[in-house]
Length: 192
Image (cartoon, rainbow, N blue to C red):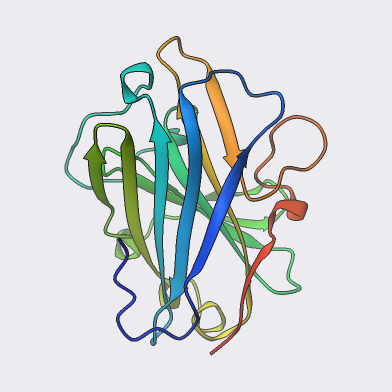
């Protein structure tokens, strides 16, 4: 579970919903807990309840940056400053791998080459549950991210044993799964 220590915002417990076109019935539920620590760090714990024998979970590895995590089981956080078109994406794999991207506007962006962003991914696994913790140092994005009002989109991609992906999010826009769509940024955190 996330260590919110001295928190700035209340802990938000949210339920993620499966995209209506997602196949694969191994996952029973997905959710997340989010808080903003004093100093501006964003702490997130994702939880996935599933028949894990039917889910592809990457094996543990040393923390490192890996691109393409969204093509397999991973957890995602999209962060935008309130009222701004730009946003950041963080992907966390149950292996401990992670990656971050910066976007000037919808899907126009590139990977962030800042090892200092290291979100310190930690993973716990039980018979029917995976929990993924991550701490995002918002000051590495900007002082405004550390202090300002944020809009978040939280999501999970689950790869089933047959390679089928299911998509879980706070809110899905109409059409195919699209976690970048601004209608998905529904969790708001007050500024410091």
